[in-house]
Image 1 (cartoon, helix red, strand yellow):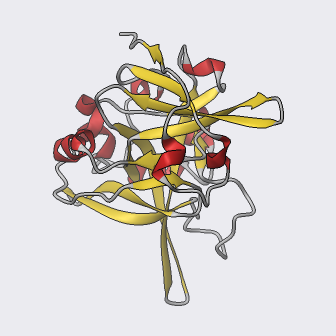
Image 2: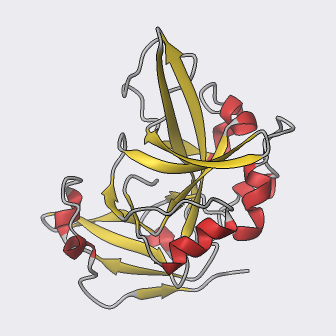
Length: 227
């Protein structure tokens, strides 16, 4: 799954935004949690845009905004059969820029958070968005697609965010034909070399967004990209 992530305004993020052909820069956001506004890159009538959306998808057809169902993640394996996600999969695909994400393992006394980050790059989470409108109110919201965890990540959790490679950006964002993406894009794999490092349990509280809580507590473990 993906329930917390970070964005850093650094050279890696700026390089990825250039690859995505969006001119805006992003401010640093730490310990981002579901329901918070997050930057989303999407394509509309052949033009790229980046806009803040609520990270918890609200389908366009529901009668009211609610968090009754967990909609901040969407399973890659069931997107095409899900009433909430099959339409956005064809018409509203997006990319959520990220620098790292956080996962947890069980430990004595509570949950141990782990920072998962690429080596010398940023991350492009594959996502979906939708637009809910009623009585003059409008909400744009999004979800991050998850898939089975790749080797190395799977020792922390069985799921991980679906992460795109730069050569896949254009095909993922192109919804002009109203078709789903190539199936190969939905398979579990890492887009780069990654590393894992333990964090302070302080980050378990999403209100803690200070940079010091994102500092690894010990040496990082390397996960090598498999081609």
